[in-house]
Amino acid sequence: MNFPWLLLILLTPLIATVLLFIPKKYVVFKDNQIALYSSLITLLFVIVVALQFDIDSNAATQFDISFDWIPIFGISFHLGLTGISLVLVGLTAVLTPIVLLATEHEVQKKNKEFLMWILLTQACALAVFLARDLFLFYVVFEAMLIPIFFLVGRFGGPRRSAAALKFLLFGLAGGLVMLAAVIWLYFVGASQLGRGTFSITALSNELSIDTWTERWLFLGFFFAFALKAPMVPGHTWLPDTAEQATPGTSTMLIGILDKVGTYGMLAILLPIFPNASREFAPAIIGLAVFGIIYGALVAIAQKDMKRTFAYISISHFGFIVMGIFSFTSIGMLGSMVYMVAHGISTAGLFLTAGYLIRQKDNSLINSFGGLTKVAPVMTGFFLISSLASIALPGMAGFVAEFMVLTGTFQRYPIPAIIATLAIILAAIYMLWLYQRVFTGAEVKESKNIVDLNKKQILILSPIVVLTVLFGLYPAPVVKIAEQAVSNTMTYVGAVDPQPLIGKAVNP
Image (cartoon, rainbow, N blue to C red; front, side, top):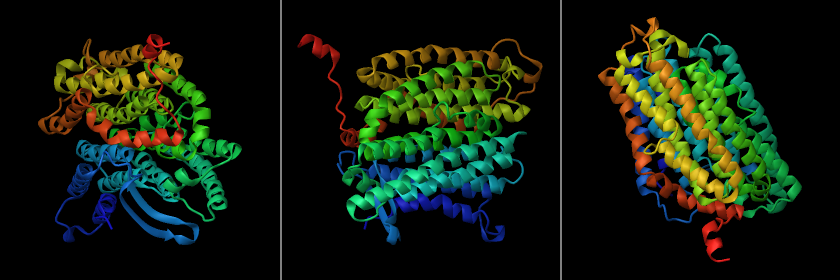
């Protein structure tokens, strides 16, 4: 049996959650320290696993841990690591300690409860990315609604209750449809294999589903993942939730948990339902392009910073989905890089703006102006995250967007060309936001704004470093995910299109 690294990664935040509620006389560390140290230990375990991960292995998963859970139904507690999941586990492990440090004073009351829900959010994200049993995946997929519901409902803005309820209802709607699809898939597998199983690997390799059944099963899973992603038109919960949530909560939700939707498309939809994936790909590409343009246009019209960031993310998720369903290696790899780049830039935007919003308890754009004069360091950090968000060359977002557009163009040139319009729209929504908040005449509300201190600069610095690092050298993400993407291409039966130039030269 392998050393249980994945189990340690998953248990660390759960153990820290328990420690938070042990009487203080029995615990040496403060609540904030327990949460931070556990997140750093988790990061250390992830680094150890990443260093041992074999990027050239053809194995479906690595570092597997599996225990019988409900044997009568073929349900196991199976954790495994693929290149795709390793990238997202790494993103989760990196962002969580940054969020904990940046939000140290975000909640003045009930800090213990806030830290508990943040750690449980991390644990749910790690579990869903590591789950290799479909039943386990579904359980965690539903469970991760709970910490965000309480983070928004307990610590959000004045309309937090309505936003939390809307988030929960959308999540439950998607989960209910997916549950029906999971049960149906179980009986399909039992009838074909002679045994019931929820093993994602077995379902991907051994099933041969008839066309009609595969279409409906695909749509059931896709509905849940599209709501989570979020894709237009099932996106409306995100702007409301982001507006009412604290910046730290929004970072965990949009920067990490929303990736579960796109991860599910790569790790479950395409391998288990390859024929339906190819059949529905053109429609999904069209829906993704619509979301890209729609999200960018609506972002321009927003008056609230946090709602602006939410609509920017909706546009960015359109790019990620487009790359996944391009069925090209460069498009899928671009989606992986995009998920990392989006997580980093989202953290930069929300956490930097969070320092500003907390000082005035206000996120309306017209409440600020001329901050360059009173907060030049904060201005610089926000500008870097803004440029990363609009995919400026040299930033992580540029490489990702270029790969997605290139990969999509190989198979769907017209949607790729339309999607490039978002580059212009991105410059408009982000630079206009930057201009209104940070440049121009100084408004009355900006006079008492305090710039970032040394500790806050140190906390945000890793985001800047990662933004530039992955912009100049995205190879680590590409190399880790490359074999897993190749396996997914094999499942789907997709082959990279031949270059158009080669066809012209050799008719």
